[in-house]
Image (cartoon, rainbow, N blue to C red; front, side, top):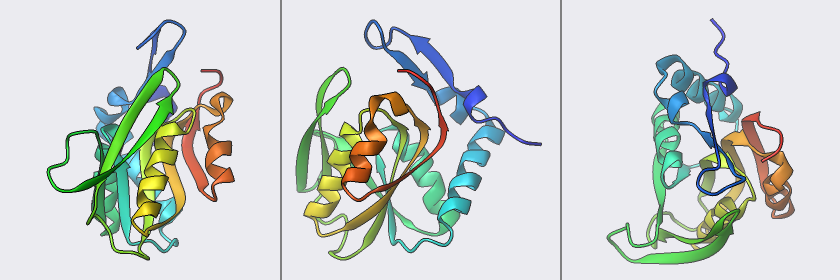
Length: 177
């Protein structure tokens, strides 16, 4: 039975601000077949790529990133919101489509030269993903691929990542914002 990933994603108008159409993947995550399909598709896309670790961005990137890491036999690196990691960190500030934020990574999360697959639930303006790429690269990691469940192509995040040498994959896309 084919699973329609996009159909399992709820849209919430005007969240967190007026004019934003929030694409909520929690409904996808609560569907066992949907969750399995996401992991299956991502594993198939990256089975022939060489990488050492998966980095997931707080918080929904942890869910799918952790599941994919287990499926592919890889380690997992959490990239967290400011103040959530207990050891020494480096930080990166970035702009969101509706504000700004800071994410952090442990200084010892990876070894220089390791190849990292970056994962998050949604690609909008690319700010969060680019901040994650910068953190990984500052630690000497190599990040050439980023995967998302959802892309919002009208917001231009894919182009920004491509301009920074990142190949982008998304399992589905929504028109508009």
